[in-house]
Length: 462
Image (cartoon, rainbow, N blue to C red; front, side, top):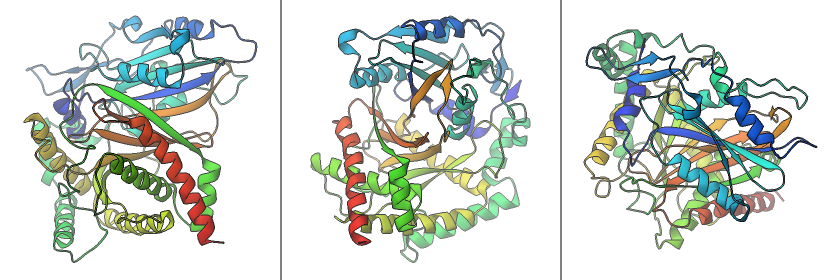
């Protein structure tokens, strides 16, 4: 038996049919040369033979009245309830059809009576392609951990035919849960909010910083929650139904801008998103006069730490004031993020965790009471960055061409954007409710904003 941390438990408390708390990934592969058209179906059949399921993929959530909420191992796992095979029809197998199909797979909650994960093999794509869509509950792990687990299930050589799917691998560090998970939940709750001197002093320091920000004595520290721009189509009450879109640029182009401007990948990606979101909102008749505010997860693990579960904080960050110059936008965002990083590093990680829990609880209560359409959101959208493998991965000689992240929606946000780097490309995974109009257009605007930034940087350094 393994108790949940407060943050992990929060994903279950916050979960509803309209707002499920699983995350997923769309992996697109190219069949090996001279392989059979039955390659994907044979892979599905092979998957079903890996019946020795390892933690956490053999664990269900137990909310019994006899004990605090905890993970419970089970041997009663029918892989046909977790692994599925689909074939897209020939007249509906293009990229849009694939995204639409995956959106439908991503919409429903996972069944809590079973381990909380699924893998879908999707066949019938053109040009010898097939796809895997996988999803697991966010309480299992955060995005960085899930990315690492996914990579562990593939090989780095097309000649390596060994097959060991992610649920059959022993994932180091799962048994070594955080120490606080060994205490009763009430004690964990106390420790999460006020439990020790580092947390208490950190919360005080963070509160003082936010107060100074509120009276405009500081600038470009963590932005204040619940004071983002006026109502936009990006925010409101989260409803069921999902749509997915993606954009991608090569890391070579990103690195060229980084070298010219001494910027980070985050600076460049957020600059593109800032420009794309503003253009998208203009299409919807919304002209923002102040910076877009994003929610941004920050990794609170120490270097080399490989524990599972979730160890992240979520802070609010202002992007650039309105400008038509992408290069100025890049500089503004770089300045903002550097100050935010300095501020975060000066506060104990426990304080950031507590801040995340408190602000998230307020937003979640508003969503549960269906007040998200009336109450200001924590931010205009959530943007996270998950580093992926730098080299191509393979499965039975089939090369993984693309990896697309598909996340969950936080309270009051109808759009979530995840950055994911893989094998020389940077992907922008956009997941939204199906009420958000023209999500594909927003994805197009991301790539156009990147091209505009390239040109602006080139002109500035000519």
